[in-house]
Length: 135
Image (cartoon, rainbow, N blue to C red; front, side, top):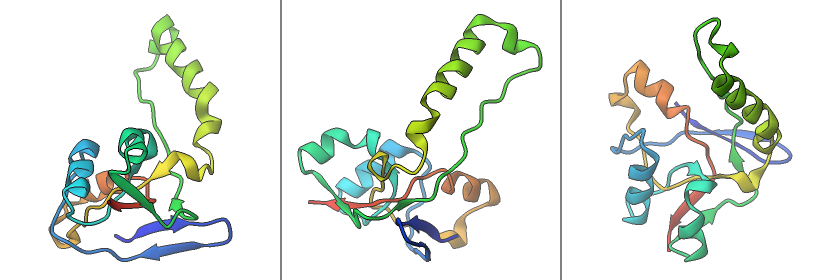
């Protein structure tokens, strides 16, 4: 599955290849920092690395396509105060996750699609694209 990158004027699907598959953001960040390639990761997971210039953002005018976030709970559970609190919080911050290039960043890591299962494909889609590489 290609990475979908979005700019202010267009959307591009970019085919990527490689032999590193990972659904853990920290592991992808470490792989990128080790020089294994480029990849995708939320910018909030790379603040320190960016400030220290350990990773550098690539294609700053592009970011990953918006992705839905789901909160799943049993019927009737939303009556609990803690569930209501998290629902209210998520609704209050949802605007931060609209088209905001500064909130998205990718880490270097290539993915070998030939070895991905359908479950791995779904996990792959959860990455946010904006490209970075180790400095």
